[in-house]
Amino acid sequence: VERVDYSSLPRKDKDLIRKAANTRRRAAATYSNFLVGAAVRDENGAMHTGCNTENIAFTGPHAEEGAISMMIALGGSTVTAVAVVTTNGGPPCGNCRQHIWEFCEGNKEVPIYIVDTSGNTWKTTIGILLPYAFSFRKKSGK
Ligand SMILES: [Zn+2]
Image 1 (cartoon, rainbow, N blue to C red):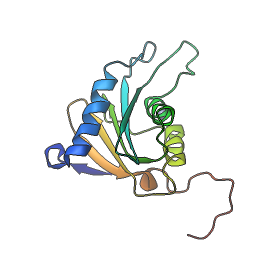
Image 2: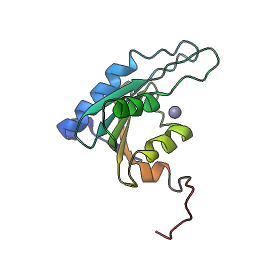
Image 3: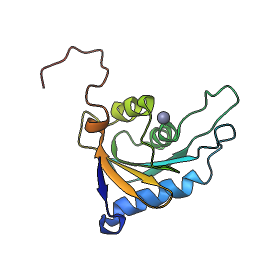
């Protein structure tokens, strides 16, 4: 996970991070008070957002899951970039890493930006966050 300078990022990645940050403010983090915003870019360049949406049984979707659900609902199919904004710069949880991977079409280089609410920005990839993803298929050796 590499620290990057937000101001040096391509405009489309800054836009993705801004969308995630704005969506974070709408999070329904009633119980944890840990607001998370996420945005994904699809294969057509469209951006989709999500925020954590809690219920008292703690079964509500995470921000990343919400963003991917929005992508699918609006006709996208492949995640090409992800931004996640949290108070402390926390990375996607294990379940969300698997969920993101599911929609990356096998591309381990899909970038993931992790940003805290002070604007500190880190860049990694889904392949780094989830190096040995679950699959029903036998490992092919690649
Ligand atoms: Zn999660």
